[in-house]
Length: 90
Length: 144
Image (cartoon, rainbow over all chains, first blue to last red; front, side, top):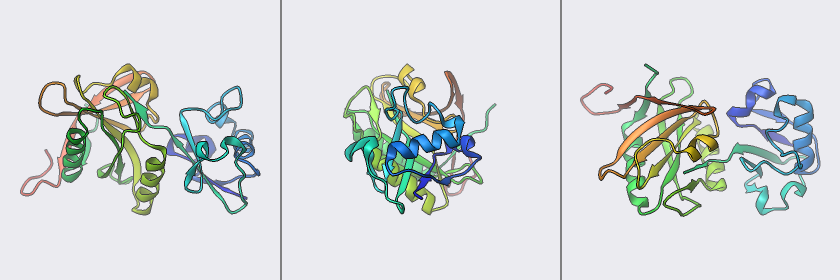
């Protein structure tokens, strides 16, 4: 069961938890599990097309999954998945 | 009046120095606060991945590193700072549209008027509210 670290802005949708134990063998499956388990997260992580939202960074251990295999990145059972809001502006 | 953003003096100096060092490009970084007091105790100057004088992006790896470091110190990420190289210290439409967290402080250092002007804002939805800034850790002085 991979651990998922949630950013403060999303914790209220997961009962206030900072870390949850999720299910899934890929990043996509983990995100789908999160949305199914915590309906408040629906639309916050993935777009309607099923892509990772560009305002969200998803990491597997130390790496941004954009630089791995994206949502198809395999997740080990002892992996840590971190989600953080993208920080940008003008 | 809203609660002030309380900045440690050293954080204030690091923020302004990083923004000046970044010229002619926008500079950016993250702020970490003690969750009990709200006081900003640490800053994480980062590269501007956008390498632009008009927009900034905090590199995703630096963001993860700062988040973990803050957590290891009992702090939480509580805001972001960046410079406006040619304009005043007021959030741009892009800043408002992309504000990641309504609980964060949005610190802007305006460099468009010659000398740095540091201001802080709350951004909730499309509502922008300036908040006062108070410095702490000033030898021989209290807050203010």
